[in-house]
Image (cartoon, rainbow, N blue to C red; front, side, top):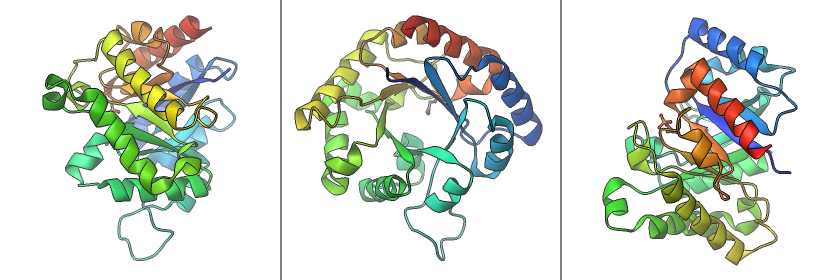
Length: 254
Ligand code: PGA
């Protein structure tokens, strides 16, 4: 059975002391025999600290960003190989904050995916519509266009290693979650779109939901047939919220 993925995106938050407390709590409630895989994506500078805590546990390490080049004069950047040195398994790509605040283009996102897959890491590709697009009824068109643009560059064989995170931009950090029905609706379209391209390649595809997931809405969301886990920002910084989401998800999909 495919594991439920719960990815904690710490964004630019944390400190050595705060991380330590959070990680200690996570080690207590996480269980390597559970149906869910818990992944922590800290800021790069804390990757070593997180790795030291989670070694031997079921918790996995992820990154929030990577550079699409192998090495060289790219001040401030981190390569796929460097992430691999820390046993990093996952890396977010195409997060709306990176697309909007750091002008990340489709081509760069695709190049990152190609490098990550070649390096044995799993890219977690974030897609989603903004509020105006949602209000115009364009959500499904936008997400399929975002997928098509990336697949055109990376190809289906590479894309089969990708985990998708549907993150409606209007729901990120706003406290406004998509309802379980709204999320399921889009997740279903994503799955159908990819399965129509190649049913075999995408039969085990994981599609996560992200956008103000918390302990109150996670239960309803995870019951939806096309929601395979979560990408969690704010609530992943609070040990009690994350614990409640993790344990709740496990009991629903058990
Ligand atoms: P949020 O962030 O849970 O704080 O809305 C989700 C994300 O941006 O990945």
